[in-house]
Image (cartoon, rainbow, N blue to C red; front, side, top):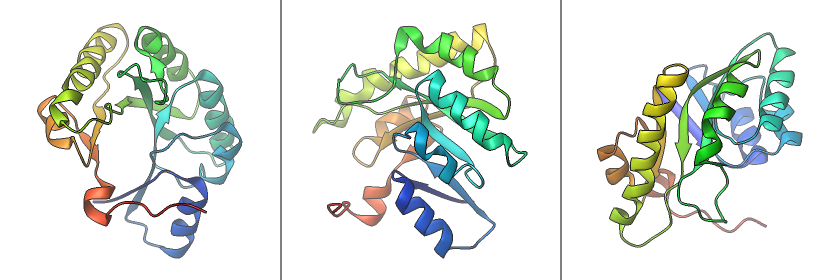
Length: 180
């Protein structure tokens, strides 16, 4: 499997244009602004960070032009950190229900970012919370097979808590250089 994730639309488009391999599954893993959706929906496979009905509506509207469906994950702010995007835990079920009703979108899971702390164990409560939230939501709606949680510094803990997808770009490629 060839899954490639990117956090910035412009960089993702550039990589997509440079690499023409149909085996690649493109993941958008950063915060996606509604006005940038149109640049990736023709070929994106999974959007990791849907956190509002406004964004869901825009994805559905744009992807309809290509007669396809796109998988999405609902981003949940389990850390409570103001610097993290995501829907609050207590609003997640409603957002899953709303976005699941949109045409051309398949809600297939949840995503969270643990707090950026030196000890990976300190991320465990956020990951445990997301797993428990998924279990609650599955009782109310439908199966959510994907739990995207854990990054290069805490992915082992995320896997122990049930992650089915991790984001480990820094561990593979090193730290990102500063964007100009």
